[in-house]
Length: 374
Ligand code: SF4
Ligand code: FES
Image (cartoon, rainbow, N blue to C red; front, side):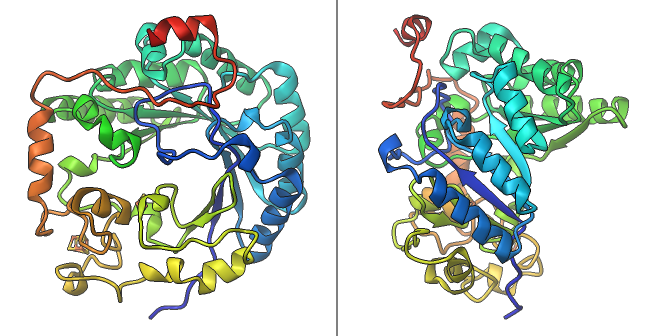
């Protein structure tokens, strides 16, 4: 067994509250209420423990982290203890005053999500009228403030044909980087899989568009794009391997190796109230469970990629097979690979409508939003 290295990054999920209702939402099916969220002092303690543990970057995320009034306090604390602070946001409620406070507190980078390049479709997927206009305004503010900007685009059947326009939008907004991420099918997204999984033809056209744009925009825009698991031959090293690079702290303080790990039933994830991040990272049974290669079944156990992809994604293995300890069916060597075939067939049929994520505690539900919901 190789020595356990400290994590590189902490995903601080400050809240599950969110003004959007994306049908691929990666937050757990059971959301934390605002009253259950860690308070400011607890988050500061967690950030301090992360710095001591060796974490270099903190990603302030959610839900929508801007709904936390103490966000600038937390950003300041992170900067003071040497953590690189990145904000992952929908941008919906970002205004010049709020951004100036965050910049003054030491924020170093912003990742802004877009649901589509086209306004009507973007608002429809986000489930909020006016969302796209607000996001464009937020992007302008971020660039005017001199912060580097990454555009996050989650792609799927309903927006993949517009990927070329999304690339142009990222350039027009002055982004340095475009992260194109295919939907991961667990939690809420699994419920909408038939509506969201793209067809092979869509995927091939998108790959051509990305390759052409990468050549044309070299030195202007970095485009991160990888094939989605359902069409790949080998899985990705999810999170860089379980308990190897990242840790997640949920709004209520549970410490996880990935944002979806709460979907796995048999693991007991400690909270920051029960143990230090260091204890949890190095000694908790939940982080040990799928770390390294000892846990692997065949064919992973004797595979020469076992320390490259670490057996793929545990949450996807569980979502598809009901057993988190099986080889990820995204691998063609998996005995469960057939489970993906039916899903891909569905992608060639007419897409059903999707089911919006409902946030009972969503703030600012506007009359426009109500009309979209009806
Ligand atoms: Fe990765 Fe396991 Fe497939 Fe080998 S068999 S490529 S280790 S998922
Ligand atoms: Fe949990 Fe991949 S999302 S291991």
